[in-house]
Image (cartoon, rainbow, N blue to C red):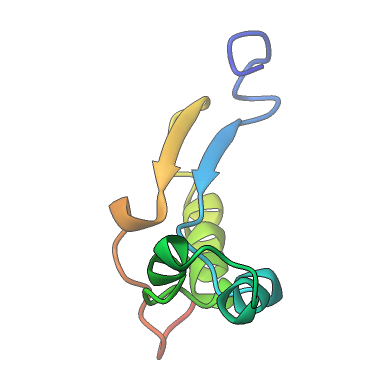
Length: 85
């Protein structure tokens, strides 16, 4: 899409939000039938969706990426919680 649409018209971004804390992850952690070899992977710390969303919003508002870019949560600087603008 980024190759077909001018970035002046629409900028395209592929964002990897990182591992997010969701209801699904919580349900998997407590699922009685989950293979025990998989359970450990779901016990690792995960991100709050709001934390990932704040980084994405800051990036999109700054427009500091090339159209068609892939950006990972962990590649972006931390968001200053005292000044979210």
